[in-house]
Amino acid sequence: MLARVKKSGKDQYLQIIEYRKEKGKVKQRIISTIGRMDQLQTKGRVETLIRSLSRFSEKTMLIWMIPYIADQHF
Image (cartoon, rainbow, N blue to C red):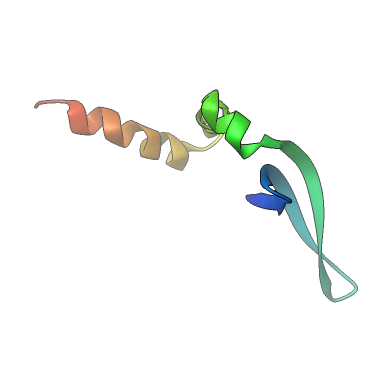
């Protein structure tokens, strides 16, 4: 699964996509359209979603910690 931005007219939408092989061909399926990018970015919802999903990945948590660690004075 991955996230992508899909353009539709003048708007862009954030989508979660799944790729799978079916009879030797790669097929894609839209799992969810999260919303319009301009609205999500204005309200800070992209970061909120990433933070929420990051609790399921130790590697992602480390990436989010880098700005915090960089601000610390040891």
